[in-house]
Image (cartoon, rainbow, N blue to C red; front, side):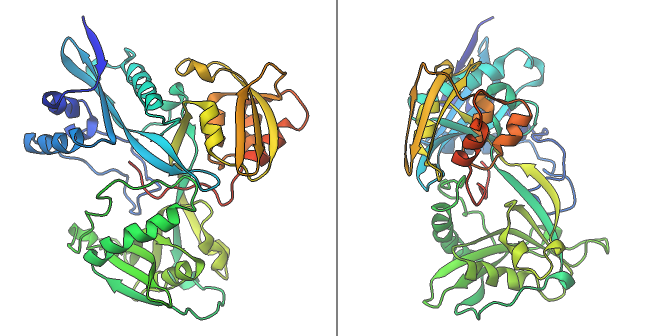
Amino acid sequence: MVTEVRAPRHDEMAAYYQALPYANGLPSWEPAEAAWHGGPEPWPPPRVPAKAEQLERWAAADIGDPLFHPVATFVDGRCVGASATISFEVTLPGGRAGKMAGVTATGVIATHRRRGYLRQMMQAMFEAALERGEPVAMLSASEGSIYGRFGFSPATYRTRWELARHEAVLLPAPPDPGSLELVDAVRAKQAWPRVHEEVRAHRVGELRPLAGRWDGLSDDANGTDGPLRYLTHRDQHGNVDGIANFRLPWSSTADRAGTLVVEALEATNPVAYRALWELLIDFDLTKTVVAAGRPRDEPLRWMLTNPRAMRITRQADNLWARLLDVPRALTQRSYLTPGELRFTIDGDQMCPENNGTWHLSATGPAATCVPTDRTADLTITLSALSSLYFGGMSAHRLAYAGHITAHTDGAVGRLARMFRTDPEPHNSFGF
């Protein structure tokens, strides 16, 4: 038996896709009421197996994309496993754009599981990402028990919340000098990239979108869900500074009738943000507003006369992070609280150069991270450091759970203060 782990050729791409669950109409996610899905039913819906023509279209697009890096496992020439990374830019603490390898579309066919093929593909992807200068890998975990084995750990979260219209009363605020407008899909496609780019520059954890991110926006109905609607806000100079996608799905049951689902909303400033929500939470002939895929620290809650009216109905981890090159990753982000820390990592079998004791020194926006032979202030697992990287996880919680062991007094508190960011990291779309 001959096993190869390598990039598939163009003529092997159809077999490559057929090793992936979504291309075969098989489950590709834990059946759950997902926090990024606004409807009441579990997500995702059933898929239809891809036909040959569709597989060829995917192959033509992916093979020609310099940001898409597929890898596959071949056993005696047959493709039995597939995965890929996508090269992204992600906003880091301090506002810098860092390189990141986004792991996506992963699967091993049922007859060849439990043989280590996924680990071999992960190893190959890690090594390729390091060669491209991408010190961090991230993914959305389709199953929570799988990816911790490879050093990934939750780094960002998202929520789904509901708000009854009769409870949606906003606190007083100065008059809005701008204006709201309902627009069609063509104008929404023009507005989204501009708004997202400005938001992304200031939101830790947000991704630079791939080309064509909003090409699928349409004014056509989608079954009983109805068409997407688009609401924009312009400032007093006429510039679009906020946009929302929403729909008003039909329901056969009274308890779900009159629901307005906000599928996406971004604003570059608090005035536009408030104006968009003010209309959406008081839309005619509705009784409930649902918003999915939202930050855990949604500011709207603190604009309500009754903050308790906003009820979190689902919460889930979003992106999981994995540091591939610890010193490079830690020096490309900045630290709000200056400080010095010596920490030890051991047990990273896939990226062994991360093992050892490191001296992190952060002074304002600049940081250094170099090996040291001095005694460490703490020992931390690679997965815990990866969770802390974007600043949204509690170092004290990780220490309490046994992922961090302090060797000097106050070390965990110093770690917490150096790495924390406010607001929490968030990304608005997956990959």
